Image 1: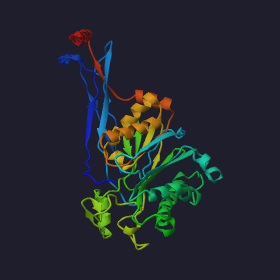
Image 2: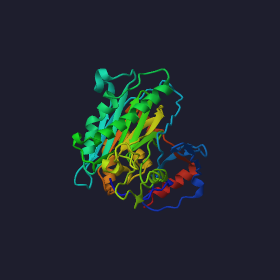
Image 3: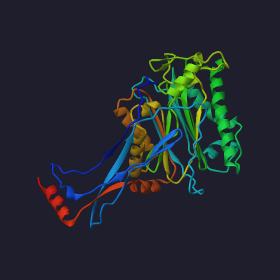
Image 4: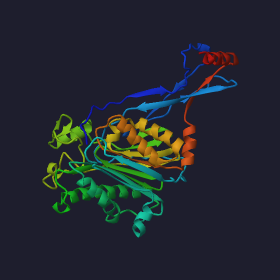
Length: 404
């Protein structure tokens, strides 16, 4: 966990292009370009659609220039849980799951991160599995004050979330089913936190961990988190953040903390912790049962996956401190097109964070929701600017590019 930085939102558009070795002046008649970007606001989530270009004229040949949109990381939070469901035009879509992960110690003396990656939950749980739909489960735990809390949560996560949980059976009533599933997840977070308070588990009261989980159940995606690990969905190339960063810099979190008697000092909770929600850290939560500025209450997001959803990135704050959501999504899309390997995508995300001098441990999971062959097809269909030239203008450009 590292000190909090000022968080801001910014959007920009960068254009990738080919250029000649020698500087040239190209006449205005060569091309005409127009494009539009549309911002769509969803409660709790800001989504920006990729720019759409217009064809300015018809010609014998075209030059295409790709557009890349980047945006800064978001950091806001809400108390309780958030439900966001994207309606799908196709009720028959079922994700085809494959995933990869990578973890690195970074500049720290030890790695306090842990993670879980299960592509086939039914095979993992066996007779305990209760649903007819295919499912998967993923989690990242970013420890602080030592690795014991993160290790304990990883080793006991399946017990709390599935073996001991009162999970709902598959129902025709999706709304009630999801409400029951949210209730079970919230209870699991609470039970894990209470277990960390038990002196018999040997986890020090000054040790804690942030946590984010992702459960894929058929078309349903359930994201639960406490702390500043983050989940980002790629929808047709656009980054959509599905979790909230619980940091003192968020005004809603600051207000909640102060209402409960806590303080924010130099962007740290009570001058000590860089997150406002975590599992463990019981020295800040006692006496047991009292309302505490530091809470283990998760935010929970529900999303209905569609054929437009390509993959999910789940990472600790060491990743998001040095790159934006859109940068991460764009990198993974490029890697999937070239390698068809989510494991390699996760490694490249970690390597980029290392090159940018992140100050923390690094752990990331990449979960693909469709076949890698289809991913390749989707990437090739991303928006382009089309430059249309007359035959005479094209000859002028060719002669300029041939000049030394």
